[in-house]
Length: 288
Length: 328
Image (cartoon, rainbow over all chains, first blue to last red; front, side, top):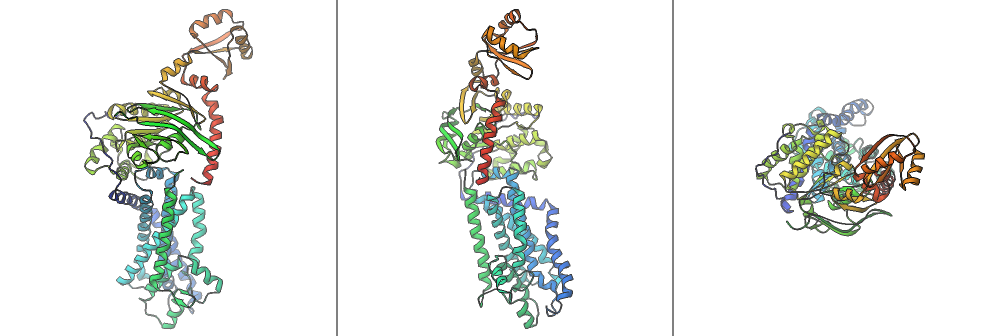
């Protein structure tokens, strides 16, 4: 046991709450997510397994059945935009789950009792999840060449931007749910139940045009669809395709017969994210 | 510093139809080590949670370091350190990373941080292990790190909720050694809860809690002196008969537990020779003890802490579980 220092150690004065203090708290919670993510290399790898499985195994295998339907375009290339969204979806959900872990392992309480706003903690958590998920997204962007998609700056930046936004929205959703769902098992069961329907309905694995009515409705209310469609538009705008093939594979999101503009689609994702974030903050600001 | 570290008036917390804390009045002076003693489910943790602003009272008022716990929540938080029953460290981070994170959340000025880090890590004896992940720490080391972290921002009041629960006896006593040292090194009020009688002896004053109320509040010595009687335990061949004899011949109310008969009597040492002279049964063993805090608890509630835990604890847990299910 070390002897206690008798030399006078200045008494720390905790400063009053300030805007700078809140920013610092956001940064600290954000940083912690990054430290934890990058110290867990296994997680970086495992969350890429499913996207790569879909892209290379399903994409290659199913292309034997679909080669006529894609008009010469590789099925892998068609699936690629959806995979860009999928990588983000999985990682962001896992990040959101970490707040449930934080609760189970008690660390959440350390953050909740600190003299900072709960909103700073929630925002830091969402920003951290978004950063981590977008990092996974970048890895998937990096393999564009393998599926015949060019590395155009506009494509990379556009896709990355949408990924970042999507990641934030999904993390906000997860954080909101974690305010109510206290057990990891329940949270996992919930995400498992949600992820695949969200993914399949989003049009990530098939064109969202000319679907039966019920499926069209489900596709239009799937928030993920509003991220997948603009990613596909950006990717396809950098491919040289026969106009008929483009029309069939990248018809784009429509409301009735109105083609929804890319910016509005992105706006939908952002708006949902903002609403979920607000709910998450409200939930975490409550005390017993 | 003349204002009290903690002051409460009729502090109350109801969960549904369960009164977890029923109108607590107490004042803890600056620099005091104050203990809450009571069985699990007595309302100790709920009271601490209210004082720490984690739970909002349903009645009464309280101030910590001169700030109201409801209206000046932030001021309270800036002035308190907390060590919970369950660990709140991030096991995937190193000891130092945990402390830096805490310093950031509390806004410890950068210019003072390095010296302060060194100081608290030295104090809890973990300076050499600062770069190790917390997951590799033993239970005692984690608790020490939490105490160190709780002190990092120089709180005026340090709340320790069952600081030694789940630790082995040796580690428990070393934690207490740290707490005593800390009193020397820091100008601080310590407010703790425990259900270990022997630990409560370390406090300047103790409040004994049962069923959400304070049933006694004084120094450990005064509380024990208040009982006035010594505890005598005897072992006989026929305990039932011994109890009957004690009642008939000496007017003493005795109870049997763990193969022995226990009763309370003034000046136990002087009573034992009388007992041996007049007792019709053979006595195999005898033990006389000064009253302990457990006896104090028993004299106020008519039951042992252990019995109280079996009933109150269960009652509390059931209701809390029900409540948690709704929302928390």
